[in-house]
Picture 1 (tube, one colour):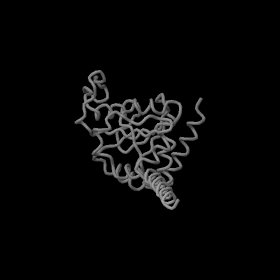
Picture 2 (spheres, helix red, strand yellow; picture 1 turned 180 degrees about the vertical axis):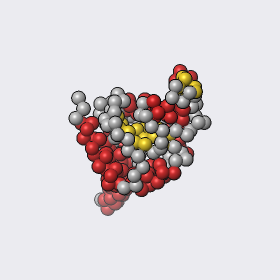
Picture 3 (tube, helix red, strand yellow; picture 1 turned 90 degrees about the vertical axis):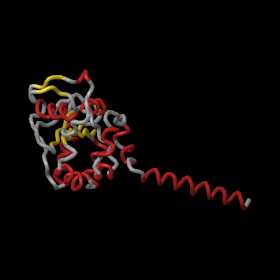
Picture 4 (cartoon, helix red, strand yellow; picture 1 turned 30 degrees about the vertical axis):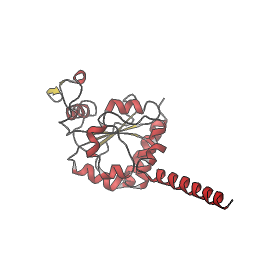
Amino acid sequence: MKYRYWFIVFLVVVLVSGGFAGYCQPGAHYTRGVAKTSPAPELYVAEFARFVPPAVRSIGLRPYYDYAEALAAGRRTQPVLVYFTGVNCVNCRRMEERVWTDPEVAQRLRDQFVVASLYCDRRDIKIPENQQRYSKELNQQIVTLADKNIDLQAAYFGSNSQPSYYFVDGSGNLISKAVYNYDPDPRNFVSQLDAMAASFKKLP
């Protein structure tokens, strides 16, 4: 009986420790948020593995890197935050570090939105040939992921600066025409996220 008692205690400790470790792993919050309703991102994940900003990684967020894939993930279930950024964008990193890591912001990004991080300076990543085309906005052929994202930002959203935040539904319809640019105050971003989430719920 004595050995049986200690064996049971050992099993309980192992199970509790394992569950706690799993909860603390990066991405645990993600599985409790977006993952419930949206599939994990697949396109260009490997290409961006070395470029995930520390602040983004620290809050357990797994952004999408392809606009169409993000739209499909948010189809009628969650609004899509379209974030035009760049590997070499200084203000993008500053806002991620000062704003995204705020607990209230991080919780909303993980649980209420599909986040599409569209990089406008990764010209080393070629897109499939069936997606390559001539861009009137850029006056050139779209060949790279950077070209594709810059064209999207210019042609559809009418801007060309980073960071720029837009909010759309799963069909790509703008929830608001207003763009949200660099702002280091987390409270303002929380207000913006709440307003966009509320507007999304009112869509037909």
